[in-house]
Image (cartoon, rainbow, N blue to C red; front, top):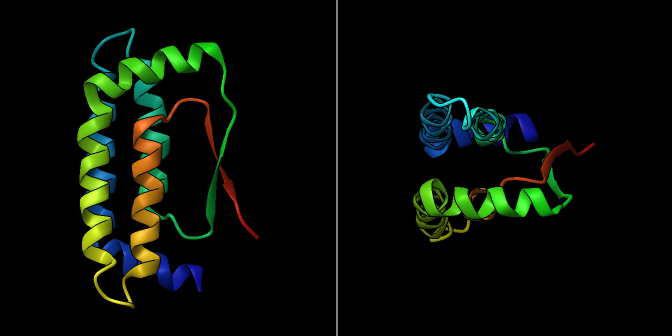
Amino acid sequence: MTFLGNIIWIIFGGFAGGISWFIAGCAWCITIIGIPIGLQCFKIAGLSFWPFGKDIVYNRSGISFVVDILWLIISGLPLAIVHVTSGILLCITIIGIPFGKQSFKLAKLALMPFGAEVVYRY
């Protein structure tokens, strides 16, 4: 079921979300200081392309909180707004609710991505 969900997700919006995370990662990697942030964006882009069958585990620390604040100001809000908007649009129909949930999961991750780890669900 996760494979089918991921295929449908790619067709109906997941590709655009993954590309937006990839572009944010490229923009952050332009500077040397932004490379760790860009690498996290690339990890989340992979999750954004194939979100079904994966969960997010948060391990917070003081450093990740400081980087999250910097991220939120520069890139986090636009990505979160896009994911929340797509989540609302997907939840209009009953069939779209699982896809809307994935979009809301990515919106939460867009607000505070550091200290988050992607784990596979079996």
